[in-house]
Image (cartoon, rainbow, N blue to C red; front, side, top):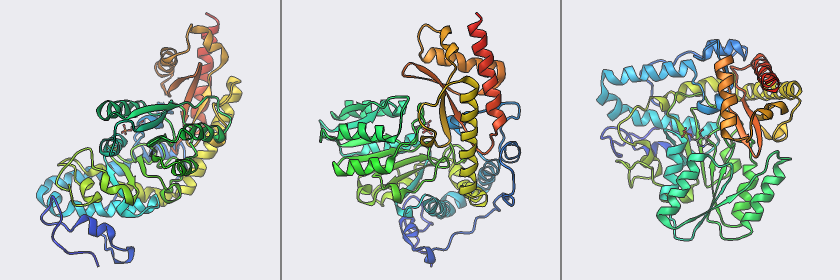
Length: 438
Ligand SMILES: Cc1ncc(COP(=O)(O)O)c(C=O)c1O
C-alpha cells in the first residue's frame, strides 16, 4: 500500500518522496491524476509526414533536419502540460502543496522503468545543464585532481570544467578523437592511453557528441575507467529517445540525458542518474527544502516553478509505449541509412564514421567543390553554408566544421522522411554549383 505518512519536506501534506520511490512495484499505488491524459491513438500512424502533421507543430513548409538542436515536442504532451498549468491555477495550494510530489513520484517511477534503473537512483531536472552542474559543483574536488574531457565534449560543459578547475585547483586534460573515424576501437584506444597515466579522477564522456554525433561505446568506456578507479560522468543529452538506453547495462557513476530532445517532451525535462554509493555526495545546483532529506527529496523540489514539462512525461511515455521504442528505432535506423546512402551518392562524399556508429544523427561530408569558396574551412564557412540553406531553401540543418572538413549533421526522427534529405541533397548541389561557377 502507498505510504500515508504526512511528512517529508517542502510540503506539509504530501507523503515522503523517498518512501514512495522506495516502495516495491506491487505495493505502489499511483495517484489518480485530476485530469484525463490526451489520447495517443492506436499506434497505427505512418511515420514521416503523417506523423509530422498528427503529432508535431513543425511547419509543413520547413524541411526540419535539426531535431538534435532543441528537439521538437509532441503535440499531446504540450496539451498535457497546458492542461496541467490551467489546473494548477484553479487552486495553486492544492496542486503544489498536496498533489505535486506524489504526481512527480509517479513520473519518476515510470521514467526509471523506461531507462531500466531503480526509481531511487533517478531524478528529474529541467535540463542536462542543470544536471551536469549539480554533479560537478558538488564533487569532492581536491587540488590536483584530473578531469578528462574530449575535444568533442559539449562547449558549455568545457566551460563548466574550466570554471570548476579555477575554483578548486583541479586540472583539465583533453583527449583527442580524430575524424573521419574508422571504428569504436579508436575511441577505446584514446581513452586507454589517457587512463594509463593512472591519475585521472573523473572522465566526462558525451554519449553522442553534439558536433560529431557518433554513439560512443560508453559501456566499454565505463569498464575501462572502473579498472583505473576513475569516476565517469556520461553526458547523454542526445541519447534518450535516440538510441535504446539501459542504465543498468551501462552502469555509470553519473548519467545525464535530456527528455526535451529526442524523447520529444515539452522543454524543461531531463534525467540525472547517480549510482547509489555516490548519491550522498551529489547536491542539486539549486538548494531548497529537501536538503538533508535524501537524494530524491533534494532534487524533487528546486523552488516554485512550472513542473508541467516533467508531468507531461506521462503523455510522452504513453506515446513511446503505444508506438513502441522498437518500431520508432527501426524507422529511424532505416531512414538514417537511406538518407546517408542517398547523400553520399548525390555528393560523391563520405561519412565521418561508419554508419553503425551513428544513432539518429549522422555527419556527411559536403561536396568537394564547396571548399573552393573559402580560404579557411572554419566555423564561419560552416555558418555561411548553413545560412544559405536556411534562407534560400527553408532547410534547417547544421553544418559542422571538423578537422579541416565541412559536414552536414543530419537528424532523423519519426517526423522526417526520405524526401527531406532529397531536398537537402539538391539544395547543396545548387550551392556548390553556384560556388564553382563563380
Ligand atoms: C552533448 C550535450 N550536452 C549538453 C547539452 C545541453 O542541453 P540543455 O541545454 O538542454 O541543458 C547539449 C545541448 O545540445 C548537448 O548537445
